Length: 417
Image 1 (tube, rainbow, N blue to C red):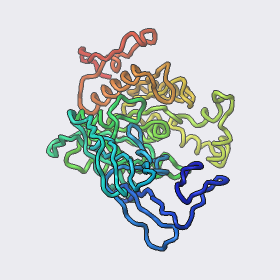
Image 2: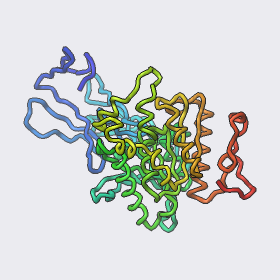
Image 3: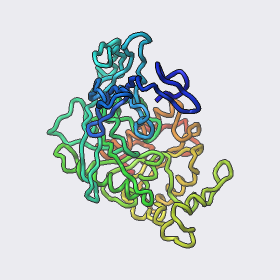
Image 4: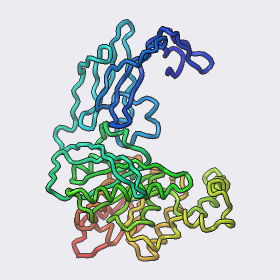
């Protein structure tokens, strides 16, 4: 559907916010097979009752169109590019990508015959990845899907550590080409970790609006159980990571599960629903009414519901080493992260808090992205691969030394976190 006047092509008129087509117009439609995630194009003649004509379909991302919102993930080339048609011919300029094929430009006659214009292959000298769509049984017995990333040099006789990264439904990204770059948040860099000998799993999560945490736990526990049954997975070396909304879900998971060897939470989200609903935001507003509508009762009418939704009330159940990333300029109050951190420290849990002065919901400076990536990697390498702990994990870095001392060096004294 055209977005503004002039994009409709022959026989299309954009008026009063709507597009009107002549019945003789032949439309090209973006298509996605929601079963295997293939992407392609169909043609449809408005004045005909015939079924749409298949032009092309395959294990690629050409253009996901309106589906790009809310379903494509961090660190990828997202939804592709909208194809551009020649003015006087049925010839198109478009891009194509897959998990193993970098985005390249193609000329396509009728969107059927493709000729490559570029042959970009930036990953050719690296241990890249392979992506597999899998179906797994969730904790409640229902089924979901996920993407399993393996190293290009995958050896089925070895045992691999696994990182489970999540947000909402991500399997539409099966054929996206992941960008190899430093992490800017807890949406981990898939190529970075896979090339270092990890498996990475992205499960689809379906949420119950009243019990969001239970939806995440249902999917992630189910995914972990499926992974643990695979002969090439070390079931004792599985970690989890989530950012923003996924960070809130990580808080819930670590207070309700003992299955994971390490966890990373970004933009820590809700740790204490009561304080979050009562503390003013930057604009002076409070979110009390929003949460009262969600819980359908005030704090004082159903305190048990508010407590159950607040991970801070279940901190005593945490057994998973926890890395928290939350900046003071984050939209969610920094107090949510400090409450979580202080409570875990009070109970002698293994926890670290990373805060970047020039960051917000993510980090934006190149040096900060590099620093965050190093610390994430060292954290997971220690707990999932048995690497020595760095000094910042064993003794910490004093506040006055922030930005001056990194603490990246391995602690050779034998101290453990």
